[in-house]
Length: 240
Ligand code: IPE
Ligand code: IPE
Ligand code: MG
Image (tube, rainbow, N blue to C red; front, side, top):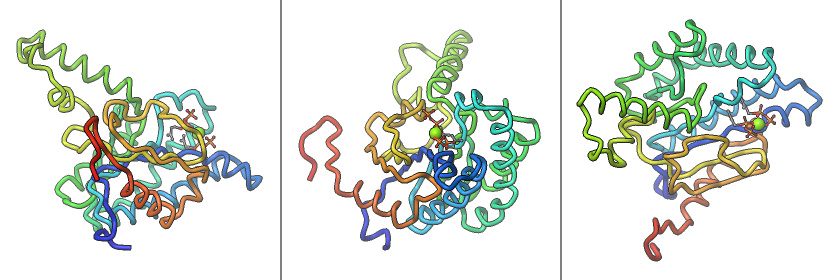
């Protein structure tokens, strides 16, 4: 499948859910599911690279995921660090521009540094813009943007009446990225779980019961094909 046969969304957002259920189905511990999830992510990123998707944003850890047991949170943080260390060379070779969204500064100093170094290293790359949401919440992101704008207004640098969609977007973690065209969520739950609340205003949703570690490149391509068949009207009339 080449990009010319598909109507490629500019920005795909993925809620990588179901690692725990995948593990339970195999009588494994939850952390085994998270490990398997990393392999799935590697494959899906390759599809995004091959098909020249402009931006791919994946939900790795939400502001709500701190509610999980300490051991699982620790494991996930270790896994992110391991993933970054192992994959950064190949991502750079593949011309991927890596970016982290969310409250990265509140992660451990070592992980935060690793994330910032990876961003710095790949910032001149011109291929897929790969965004990893870590300690990310859509409501939190909007609050941070609102606070930043309020501070600028208080300093006299921003005229409140000039705040429009574009100004707000410049203050979001996704500044400079196109709006989300398609949201993919695996493992059967039909919700956003506080992901990219502003950016998904006109996104197409694609849900599958398949757990994240089992999502194959072929399955992802099916989602992209389905996207290509959607009639996106944006409030207007039929677009086909
Ligand atoms: C998604 O899988 C990974 C993270 C949220 C970090 P889950 O861990 O949520 O898996 P389920 O939903 O319990 O199956
Ligand atoms: C959403 O999955 C967050 C990530 C995939 C990182 P959750 O498993 O945390 O979502 P809920 O709890 O089912 O809404
Ligand atoms: Mg889940």
